[in-house]
Image: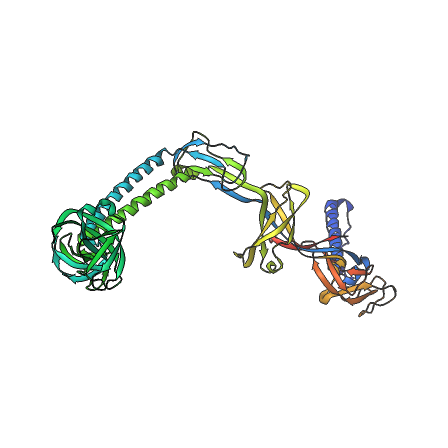
Amino acid sequence: MTQQEVSSVKPKRRINLKNIKWKKVIKYTVILLIIAVIVGKVMELLKPAGNQAQMSVQTAAVTKGNVESMLSGKGTIEPLDKYEVNALVKGEVLEAPFEEGDRVSKGDLLYQISTKDVENSIESANLSVEKAKRNYDDSMIKLGDLEQTAKISGYVKKLYVKAGDNIQAGANIADIYNSDYMYLEVPFLSALVKDSLIGKQAVITMDTTMEQLKGKVTAVSDMEETIAGNIATRKVTIKVKNPGGIAAGALALASIGTEQCAANGTFRAGVEQTITAEGSGKISTLKLAEGRYMESGSTIYTLASKDMNNAIEDSKLSLKEAELALKNQKNQLENYSIQSPISGQVILKNKKKGDTIDPGTDSSKGALAIVYDLSAMTFRMNIDELQIRNISVGQLVRITADALPGEVIEGRVEKIGLNSTTNNGVTTYPVTIRIDKTGNLLPGMNVTGKIITAKSDNVLMVPTGAVMRDNIVYVKTADKDTKAEGTGHKDNGSADSEGIPAGFKEVKVEIGISDGTYVEIKSGLKEGDEVYIPFVDTSGIGGGDMGYYEEVTVTE
């Protein structure tokens, strides 16, 4: 080499161990080791599922037991009935014969409030009714002056007025005639006529036909009259029912017992008179017509008076208003005696004897008292619309409470409500559970209810995870070297491409109640069969409280 070439060659550099920074070397070495471990773990997780199957195969035996399908939900215990006692009237509490915790029966007195104020109001209302009644009676009396009624019965023989006429008191209205009964006035010797004859029977003999009729003496005259032959007589009046042929003015003889009349007498009609007006004014309505029969007590005419009619109507309304006000005041008396509307236990008492009750100011302070009917209890569950058809009245409900660990109480579905509630697209319906044997439950406790929707006793069952899609179950075969149906593996711990271990055969089953932990097998398996259960990684699986869930309970 030339000198130039020799000079261009650089001498080799020696490593000086003393100059190495050992702390950095160690640090980087540890980091590399950690990375290697992590990569190894990742590679292990990325291995095929069949390798995992070699490590673990889960199985379970087909057993017999009782399977119950249930819908569960939470709720808060309430009494069967509760009532808040409130007052409708103001006053001082005279009696409050109960305390918190006491048991009361329906109708028991809780509060007696002083009735002093309402008694004064009732007295005032009574006076108003009396005053209104007097005004109404006065109006009716005045109306009577405008309306005339018949004092007798008979046929209208002649009518002197018509509707629209103006009349004065005393004016003739109509002639009334009634011959249903006739009166015979006949003379007897004065010496024979006595008042004692009144009421005695008489025999009448018609002058022309000699027909005999029976009648009754109704009057004797005190006036003495002299007839032909200077005979002193007194007239006796006899009433006889008209058989239809007797006319006014007809003649007849009469005898009373053995005594004979002194001469013929003359018949007159039972009624034959003219009725006259009792008031003055314009005839508004006339109820009579010639030839018609007029009943005693019927209206003859009504005089027009618009002001009087209005006054009568006003007085009638005033009377009704006064009577209604009195009735309302009397009804208020019931509000001063507050009774328990239900039988139960007093939970709260806010007023005592001597306190003043005023609904206007006390309403914001709560009820006077609260009564709970604890003969039974209830709570409400909200059931999803997809499950509500599985619920029916009378179904058994098992109830547990956080406050009563280990205690199970039974109830029944009492009512299924239709007033649904929708939240975030989920519709639920309220279901009321009734508990008759309440045990140690108290109102306000939080409970979980499990409604038994179906039950199968002493049936074949397997864990729910053993049933695959289309109701397929993989059953372990007796020969370990046998290939699983549909696979190319032997029972050497390996699995096929779907993760099913070798040595298991596919069986289609009929299932019954299915949910939660176990499922009922109706056909396809027998007791003691060993079935495959896929491994399920439940890490990270979670969910919120949906308000209800389904499960099964098994009793072996």
